[in-house]
Picture (cartoon, rainbow, N blue to C red):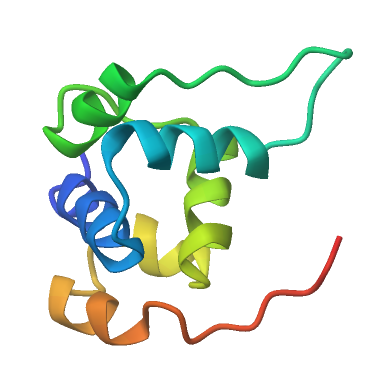
Length: 98
């Protein structure tokens, strides 16, 4: 069983941040720490796949979305949180600095 609301929530994050697919891809890349000296590459086309439900982001990418939107990961990943509840929480969580 997939996440019915996940694509809509990811689009809601991008809308909330007022970013294009290219800009959100760049922002997600900057949120994900490099591994083995290599940065994590997210192409704008991948953002479209996430938002259209053709592909689910992995946990690392979901965490980056949560950091950008300042929401708890659970709000994004759990369909028990409706889109309306989710939109009301965008930008409200203060995240600890790494």
